[in-house]
Each structure stands twice: as C-alpha cells, then as structure tokens.
Image 1 (cartoon, rainbow over the protein chains, first blue to last red):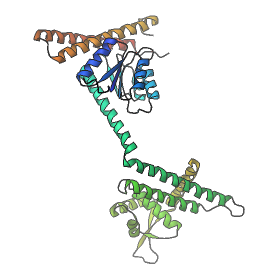
Image 2 (image 1 turned 90 degrees about the horizontal axis):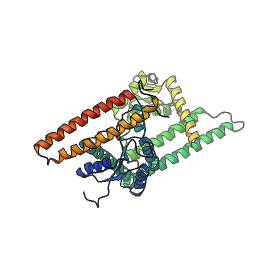
Image 3 (image 1 turned 120 degrees about the vertical axis):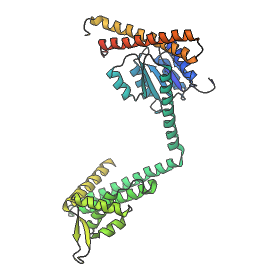
Image 4 (image 1 turned 180 degrees about the vertical axis):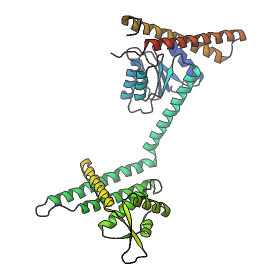
Length: 299
Length: 75
C-alpha cells in the first residue's frame, strides 16, 4: 500500500486484533485505512484528517455506544455530508437498525464479517462519498453556481416585488373612504408576478425542462377573464410555449374537470372560445389570493 | 425478563455472547485471509476450510442464542 496516499477509511474497534485484521483486509484491496481503539481517538483523527470518507465502526466502541458515537460524528462533521458510516454489529436488533437508518448509515455488517463483503461495502461507500464530493465541488465552482445565484437573486427580487404589491393593496384597502380593494387587482398582480417567475425560471432551466401547459392555460384564461377578453382555442394554444397537441389535451382536461368551458362566440357562431367556469374562477382566485398572503407572510 | 435466566445475569450473558462472537469474527477473518492468499498446501487448505465451516456454524448458533435473549433493553 502506498503510504503517501492519504487514508480514506477509519476503522473503529476496541479489539486491536480485529482492527489489525480489518486494516489487512482493506489493504489487500488497495484501500488505505486508519484505525482507532476508542470513540475519542476516532474523533481526534477525523478532526485532523479531512480526507477520511468512510468510518467503519463496531457497535460497542468503548466510552460510547456505537450509535451515540456515530451520532456525534454526524453532528460534529455536519459540514462533511459525504462521510459514509458503516456499522459492524454482532447482534441485530430493530432499535439498532432504526437508529442506523436515522444516521443514514451506508451499510450494516454482521459479525463474523467476511473479507469480501467488507471490501465491497467499503468500496461502495467510498464511491458514494466521492460522488457526493464531486457534486458539491461542481456546484461550488462551476459556471452553474453563478446561475444558481442568479435564481436566488431573481427569487429575492420577485419576493420583494410581491411584498410591495401586496402592501400597496393592503394600504389602499385600509385608506379611509376608499373601501375594500378589489380582489381582482390582487389576482392580476399575482398572476403577473407568477409570470415573471416563470420567465426567470425558464431563462435559467430552459423551457423544455419544466413545462406546465395546464397551469399556463389556466393563467391565460384567468388573465383574459380579468381583462374581459375572450380567447379562442387556437389563440390559447398558440400563446402557449408547449406543443399544440399537448395544450389541446390540457384544455380538454380542464373542461372535463369542470374548470373551463367551451362557449360559442356570439359574434360568429362558427367559432368557439374557452373561458373559466365559475368553479375555475373561484379556485384560481382562492389560489392567487392565498399565494399572495403566503408570500407576504414569508417576506 | 428472559424466561429461565435471572434478570441480573442477562447483561453478563449478553457480554459473554458478544465476546464469543468477537472472537469468532477474528477467527473467520484470519482463516478467510489465509484461504484468499492461496499459499497453503491442499491438506492445510482443507483443514482451514473445515475450521471456517465450524466457525460459521458456531456463529449461526450464536445468532439463535441472541434471539432467545431478545433485544437489549434501553434504560
């Protein structure tokens, strides 16, 4: 084993012979391993060696129950989410299994352990740790990180926009002599904000990744209703960024669901337009006003 | 309360069983490593395999003993 390569595994057991053997088993699989005879020694090694990716611990380490020790490891090294915990036990119990799951132990080995299964479990844990490290490194350093910051900034700006809009609505409503504000205004502003959010999100993730044709149709119908306009099936389908056939299917779904209805155009009987039913209108109003309230409370 | 075993002795029983299992575990790992290295003569290899088989049987009996004792009580 090349000693210049930092060990990525830490084995913890109060039995020195078991530690020596585990180390030999892993070494024969070209896996570098440090050993600790107690929980305190293990914690000290982990503090000094950030390259450790996997902790293989006996359930009965001295001075601490195995679960208690692993709990401490998870809490103290919360900034190392890639750390993989492998529990070794001689006695399976439901309580231990539940505790191990809670600590997201990556595996649970029963004594007597076979070298092959120990190597396989450790190798699997190492691979998993490595992939978590890679993902974290990517999000921290890649150009994608700036896009994520952009998402966060956009969300913050939209939340501020939303808060201002709703506060303006509320102050208008409370102003003497003006009477209650129109709920339609809140709905319209909320719709506009949601549209802005959609545009911002699509700009970053791409339109094809998260299409929402049913929501797009509902929002468009609500906007038209609030503006006193009629929308034909064709113009509704054309205004959507989703494929025509998908939009037509979603319109049919909304009609079947009682949220929208097809109406003959009084000016031209050959044409039909689609509008929200009273039920659809009530639900959209409920959603938009509720969303506005929630956004205000959160901002 | 474990049937037939006074409560005061259950903890000791558990410790003993755990120690036996730990020893068995060491024996199994040692034998497996010897077998993996592939250097032993045929006769020695056969002895090792028999020893390993005996250890596995002992471990199986231990598991059954754990089941009779039941889960450890948390204070």
